Length: 484
Ligand code: NAP
Image (cartoon, rainbow, N blue to C red; front, side, top):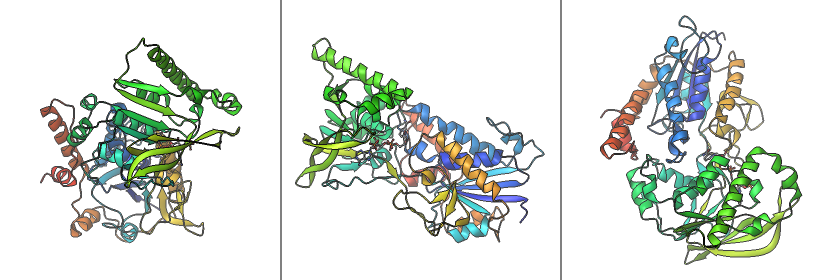
């Protein structure tokens, strides 16, 4: 097959999918490309809109770059495409490229693999990882025990989660030492009025304003030099207004040559150690009475492995942790020393997990689509023609948003290498997809619809003296986007 035009479906319009589209548009190629980008939500941008905390406007700003990709390429005009940052010099006479966004379209329900084979040469799945990894300890199912991902979806106004979140606990536990644990801790411990300058939805602000939290306990099963936090985010936690960072000096006293010799060579860890040392100094000042205590406290516990959620009448009443110690190789050994800390709610922030997709192989252990450099593999290890993956559903839920770019590049290189061995669509006409969706009564949204929704959210914000107020109901999002 000698391609003159490649029609590509991308399922998942978060950063992974949009970067993949951008890279294909800019790739050196001798054929035209038409890319249809599908998402189950009415608005694009995936985890940037529904995973990044509202008080991180710098990271949320990635939306502007992603939007540029959708805007510039939607017209299929190469002279526009070549203006985008770092774009290849396709030139107006070169091969053409276009992207169309279709929101509110659920793969497996509104579109099947057979549909994709009929209309495209290939598909890239970039559906990410949106569920919480499981923590297998007794009591984890108790009332008041939550997954971080669900809480993040709530405070980021995800349309498919309930509008209310039970915030009744004065003492709260957060398990995990990664950036999601930091986000969750910050959103729980911050005073709600300090979040007003952000885009938080009204219901989230109302909920957080009722939060009676006094103490948050953050648990890491390894030591302070083993954390997965990034320095900027960790420093920010210590700077939250009216919150004291409480450190257990015992956590810093352990003899751990592995950490000293190996980890302390890492620049990030050196900065992180400095930040924690500042917290320790601040604590000494407080203990000497030189500084007045804050109204909220954040206790940082290292070398503390959660072993049980203590319950009373089916509700979270405490967290039992076992003290751990370094094993000399970066791991831990149990010490047999236990402690119960009273808490009335608990959040596990121990990693995200991918979800299986209809008719697509899935590795249930790792929560990813099995693949080799982005080429999807079937159960017997052979390549599945025309099917590719990128982003967290390809490599697992690790890495910052920017890392998704190099990942997309790897997948695209494979796709381009395979360009003569893809599907042979029987209906490659670009108008066939909107017609198909209409015939199935799918209320799909487009990039023009996103512009309408974006303008609507900005105007809601302006009316309330805020930058933006996010719309959280799927119906309202859809109606605004479709101009109904
Ligand atoms: P993560 O960085 O992989 O951290 C997971 C944490 O959970 C680790 O501390 C891990 O400890 C701990 N953990 C895992 N299983 C555990 C268990 N059974 N018991 C106790 N602790 C356990 O994952 P994440 O926080 O979900 O973040 C995912 C990715 O998104 C990361 O790359 C992160 O940097 C990124 N992200 C970035 C930002 C930002 O830039 N602002 C915000 C959010 C997320 P061990 O190390 O001991 O396994």
